Amino acid sequence: MNPGMFVTLLYMVLHHPSRTAKIVRAGHTPALFFSTKSSKVVPVQPRGIALGLDATGTLFDEDLEVQQVQFQEGDVLLSFTDGIIEAKNTSGDEFGMERLARTIRRNAESSAQVIIDKVLAEVDGFCGDAEQADDITLVVTKFIGTS
Image (cartoon, rainbow, N blue to C red; front, side, top):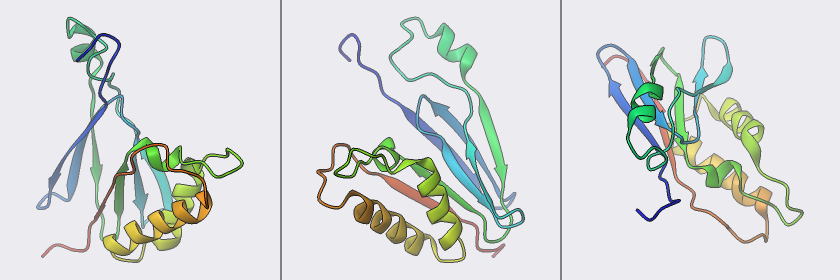
């Protein structure tokens, strides 16, 4: 990489038998976790700096944290790029984390594909005729049972 460049990363390991996801984040947008038990959306934001900002790797190693989430049936984990929350409408307003959380809460009982479709439709509707300025990537993980 050229000097001054960096890369963010979110790495997730899903383990179905234990109903867990282990998440590491290196400067990336936090994941969002919807709990059916509490009906709340909470950020999953382990510590970690972006790749390329620490020439020796010492700070990166010291700062890196792993967080684990425990799934119950119906829980949703959403990982995404900042192009979703930073998407702007023609007035320059950003879509934002709260709109994204509301969209997840409203559609949490749907399938992972429907949640993806709804999020993308909400972003598109919010932006209207504004030009897309950044990439939009979205992964939805939904725990639907033990089998």
